Image 1 (cartoon, rainbow, N blue to C red):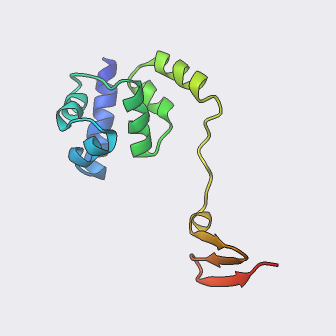
Image 2: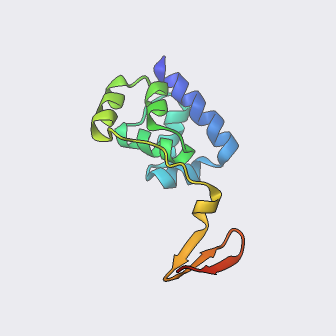
Image 3: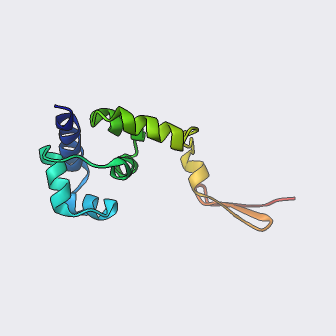
Length: 114
């Protein structure tokens, strides 16, 4: 049963990462909906699958495969043909630029740009 794979994934990941309440709020669904997904009694629609992937920081196609939704994958590929995960380092995330001064907050350095 395809719903079972996704249900197991959600159950395991939610146990590791936090409560179903915060997950439900982030996905803009009710806790009852999340419970039904985890129990395998219902399955998420396309947009919820994408939000699940975003929450767990995985490629949405992985969620589509777990849900056994090849149609979702085809729709996703047509809608977002060039999806690529950004390869940002922690250095990039904490780099702040203000005018001609660059502040590297990760290292606490200030340097003037010419």
